[in-house]
Image (cartoon, rainbow, N blue to C red; front, side):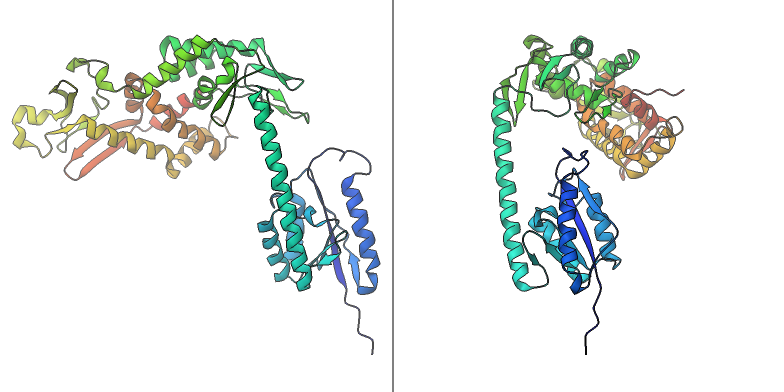
Length: 446
């Protein structure tokens, strides 16, 4: 008695790493598809039937599984719509051994066979599995070898001062794969360096850039996609001030090489800016003013004892190497130290605690969510991720601010700090987070 023929739905998967040639009427994906289709037709006696659906990934690397065509294929596999997957060559499906092992698990779970047309094997046999793993190992080795050669060539080109692609920096255009100064944009770079040297304030510089409507670079990719410039935020300013490309240098893995491009700023301006940044980074408040009445007490006016009395700044004297600063309860001053549980706290102890709390406050999910809701009132299309990145700038720029700027921002955010034996309680300003958010993003309310 003749056994009934079991129908096997066959899906063809094709992939090409780059988009070159895909616009042609008959391209590489079509060639792969036709070869696989002929193979399936040759197996009709085994019940093989081609599904009426294509799974193509043009311009996608085989180094990972994040590909739209492959995702559609795996979704159909999980729904039981595919029995056999046919590819022109094994590495069209994946080039990574780890990814392949994950795919094999999925195929096995759903009883799917994997077949390579040119390599003539499938995963239903133990020999096919062994051969496939061996071929995949060699494919991965070849890929890593090519990657090493590319990295070596990239490093050698960088050492020669050549621009090796990527997003062109503000102030330059890419002409015939070389950086050429864009005179209009170069004015923005010069302005940023000069104004930072003039007053050393990142926040003030952001406002000045916003008032002049200066934006990040607008450019067009090699594929014709237009990238529009946006607001210049604190991260952009810091990267510009730290990027030696503007003094004519190409960097690669910590090494600096004289570039082929024309510098926008002089070596002296660069050195002066770096010196100012380092000075601000290592500056300590006590070195700015030795007079107690002018000491840069960060929490002046917002710190209170457990009874609600204000704690006033007090200079506790100084040794040859340092000056001691305290916040002293005004109740203790007027009625004696025995009248309050916490009579004083050292500024060097309480200030880092409050700053640490603020750093955590700005990245707290509920704060990000609340800020996003309020930001949407003025920017309906803004995303949570954009708000999160904006608030995260606080942690990056805080240490670069002068003490007076730190004091102003502290008072924007914090309404009251109460100190007791049980700990510290912080009450935040109702609109403080939005005030700082708008300054970080150079946005103003209508």
